[in-house]
Image 1 (cartoon, one colour):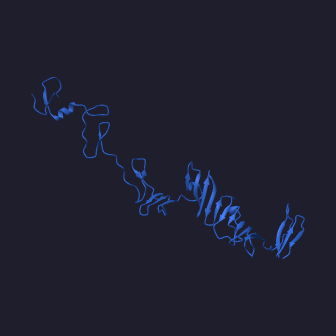
Image 2 (cartoon, one colour):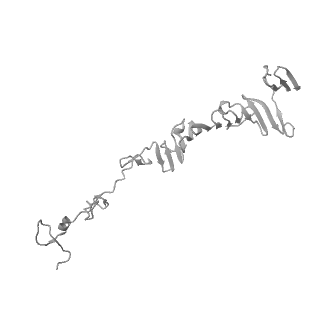
Length: 263
């Protein structure tokens, strides 16, 4: 018979009598736990958060690293088990719930300030060659397939290049609101000085006006303003119809001026 909690064995070298082993002696003759063997768990090394690894050793939990930068700086990996930040270019304004990209003081829920002049400074979608950017101050451009296609600013909105555009201000009979050639020829197009009027404008000069219900008429009519100077050159492939001192005249390609109706 043996007493409780006694393990019999022998730790001394060579053969001999069976001994009552202490806990330390038992531990010394049993295998330790490793990645390849079952066995005794090693000492933890202290602390309450250490964990047992698969290789049979204890380790402290990995550190998350200390935060980087000023309050509001968004954290990202520094590639060395720590954190880094760039508050000047990636910032969260927790007071106003605003995210700044390229700016440390965002003025909107999402404020992007990558500079101006190209899509590389704006917002791109899909494969990266289509998006929107600030072409110059207070002007937005939409780029499609790497080419500027559409723009809008404080004054005009329309297609880039010589595409059509719209004037954002108040039109008149000499200021067009519909501009066929966009920013390349802003004083030629269709304007309106009043309700129920459309003016054809070329070079900032009204050439003809369609009016509805004006001057006692029922329906629409065409008004042709007087020319300051009548044409002196002969047109090619057609003729000039104009008014001079209230008279309606026509100049043909041969140079003959015919009065169609007197003033």
